[in-house]
Figure 1 (tube, rainbow, N blue to C red):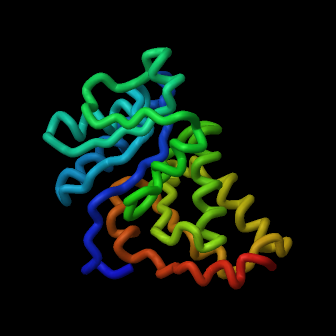
Figure 2 (tube, rainbow, N blue to C red):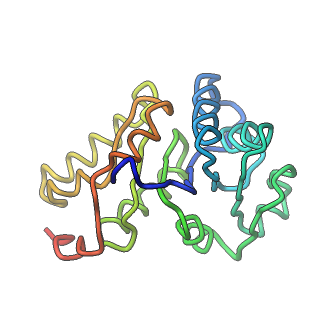
Length: 198
């Protein structure tokens, strides 16, 4: 991508844990501030706590636009962020992940648990097949994603993936680097299906 490309909407995969270290929350603040500075809409899981809640709170406090996408069963147990007016309630987790990608100009994965990992790996799989072609940015704060990055590199070393597939994502050390990484991400297109198999 080139810096002339306008980024209007970014989906962020992140955790809802209430027990995480403060440094993760501060990094989420930095991401929200960068979105606010560029008038970028945040798309997220719709939660009210953890990194989800922190991102939404910071965006909303400064008049930013926030879209939440949440399965109905999560609303039923009152996990939805009450300050987000634009929450789309969907049937299940599968529809949620599909809706995350609709109209999204880039994906960002902050540190998170199994849900964040699952969403990130599905997006990488879709990109490998040419079904999703936008930038994927992994925020590797304090080396959080080092084991996953090593595993993905191992997949290439053992020829389960091709070396070209390492271009599907960009790794940054903190959220201040996210937008520059989005603007300079390698181009990817639907033709990736031609070399999806190894």
